[in-house]
Length: 213
Image (cartoon, rainbow, N blue to C red):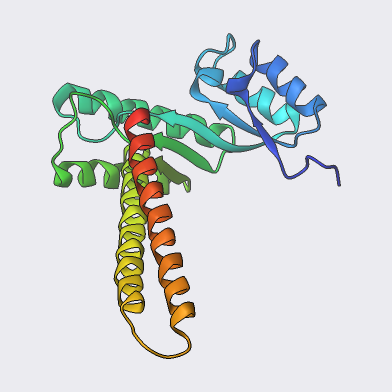
């Protein structure tokens, strides 16, 4: 077994004809390939000739990309995207790819009605199932939202820790008597220092987020 037997390459990263791309990927030692609709639709010999080239290469297709802006459209735009989706599913099956990749819609013509979006995605999933294919939808907008929620949660946790350190240190430093008073004083000071570091981290995190937005 070769080092790259479990790895593949995306044709979108290479220039040239489909045959040249497939040959370069195979010669590099890869055994799998991710194909795009352009590879097949733009082939001089048509879809069947492109699929034959993929089979002749010996590379195993792992996915076919990418269906964009499918859900949330209406009237003629919706029917147009349905035709595109059917065509891509047919090409996906032709090359023997088990997966069709789709991106969540960013079209300004798409509605935000969740019922309509769910209906369209359900229609797409049913079409994929009829061809015994898998559908993977990339939700890039939700990923960005998830990152924002994660950052906010981290800041909230650090804020709670900072508050706990300040309160705990204040209680410790106001404790009186006993031979351990020095140690309590030192512990309280360390708590305030830790709270200071936490506060600086929160401020830096907010400042860095503002620069990247």
